[in-house]
Length: 190
Image (cartoon, rainbow, N blue to C red; front, side, top):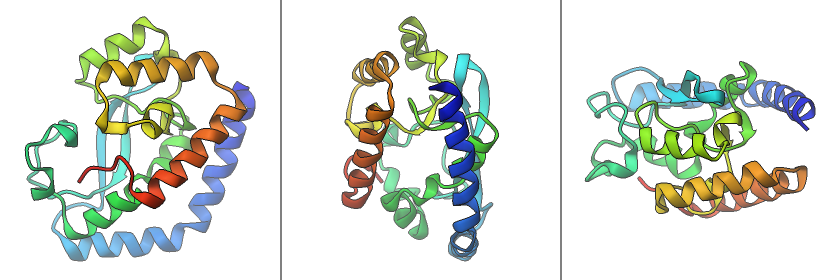
């Protein structure tokens, strides 16, 4: 499954980058017009085998937002989110630049979401159960079953379930649930 999944990732990410390039340009323009700062946001994350990499997103928050803090831990995250950022987050369009991370081989479409480099508890628990051996994904089993609404322990149990049961069928199920969650903005905060 490894070679085929990587091949699928390369082909689909390339096609999507090409097809979505007009949308990228529109979003880049809207972000620049809406607020000061860069268009993209790069954040240090933990990848396969606990290697660090920079994950890319469209910037959805003001430049004075505290860095390297998960949004769900902010007291009032909505105070930092820009107008365009609210729409990007609600529709998950802020995640589109991760297509570049997929092309580089740092991420895959389906896998556990990459931890922040400073989420030591999450990294340790994932390492204990072998989840760190997987390439992180844009979406995953924990994402579609609670995202930021669940505890770290629950997230790791879901990640471990994916690690032990990964298959084409499970990946398709995750894609369907992801599309459903995005369409209904389920489990999306700020």
